[in-house]
Length: 142
Image (cartoon, rainbow, N blue to C red; front, side, top):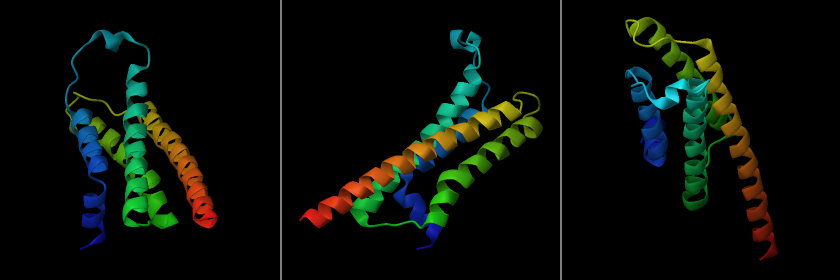
């Protein structure tokens, strides 16, 4: 089985989250009372991308501890940071140039996407480090 197919099978919720980001990024949103909240769009971007990377980290902990599936540092940086940031940039470009004016690509949206990814990566790495220390301590106490 090739790496991308195996990765998709091990991280189904992350894949669903990415598909949801694509869908939500290209449909025309309805006007709601929340539309009047200042910077709601930026907060939405931060939560969508941070949430997706957070889901990735939860699935990674699950497959790492249950199945022994280990990703090296390069693969983790690529999957948890580079790919989501690049995805945010590509989607903003597609919104700017391929939606016929229905959606607009904005630098601040890209910044909010990236900030969500960074915050989720910091939280994910902190929790992963804490869990690894606890498991290491548990293994040596037995």
